[in-house]
Amino acid sequence: MKHFISTQEWKKEELDKLLDLTAEMKKDPEEYNNSLLGKSLCMFFYNPSTRTRNSTEVAAYQLGMHPAFNSIKDAWIGYQSESIKDTSIVLSKYYDAIGIRIFPVSVKWKYKEGHRILNEFARYSEVPIINFEDDQFHPLQALTDIFTIREKKIHTEGKKIVISWCYHPKPLPFSVPNSILLMSSRYGMDITLTHPKEYRLDDEIISVAENNITQSGGTLSFSHDIDEAYQDADVVYIKSWGARPYYGDAKNEKQLRIPYRESWRIKANHLEKTEKDSVLMHCLPIRRNVVADDEVIDGKHSIVYKQAENRLYTAKAVLYNLLKN
Ligand code: CP
Image (tube, rainbow, N blue to C red; front, side, top):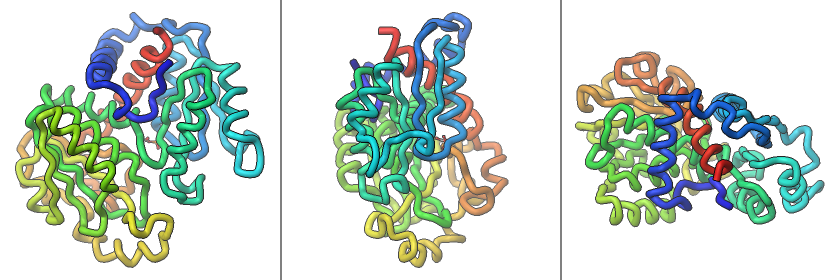
């Protein structure tokens, strides 16, 4: 039995198969209608969601499954209530797969605690666990991102992707930047990670990405100069995240980020140095005119709605792959 907790735990050939299946399911959705008839999906949310919840629910429905939404507010699970072990065993008696979303706020910003909880679910579950985004990884998003890049660019190998920090009023989790870094480094991309100096991602993740690159033939460079970083980019992936030294300390971190409010808000002129057919990506939700200007989100480079749409097809591919075999 396989889980889908991080793309890194899947072999490159397995990810390739998921991407091929996504393409097939997008091209010919009827072929897969009701292919998982009679199966059920538990959708367990500690935190809100628009895309993950709805894309997965519709994906399950179209495959013939019964998707059941569960909110943490309606469950016994918790620090002083039912254990993860009991919850996981019991839910896996009813369902064929369990998807879980858990953000840092739900684990009191204890570093990597959300990811640990997901792995604890997996340890006791008798059915596949799907990461609906924890505090470290968002594999459904990263799979979709590479699918969407390939859909636009054909080949990822040798294409320049800039993973760019941007201003946001609050510190956000590392799950999306970690995940796109890991996936783009599996797919041979020339990666430039750009952020203010205090916003370096976890060295452990960077080291995994560097190792990926030795296998895939890509490159990884760092820049604290946003204008220099965007030069000749084929893909610009914007996303804000928190400063590691202030993890869980939003009050003090605020002083650090405020000076970047203007210079790291993404504007149309930032994209002028990129390739003329470059694409601008963001996983959404995004705060318009705070993180990036309307001109950027609605501009000619933006493929953010295509990314969001493709979440439906990757969700179907993951469910099918985990449950059909
Ligand atoms: N991108 C993403 O996961 O969006 P939601 O938080 O709305 O699910």
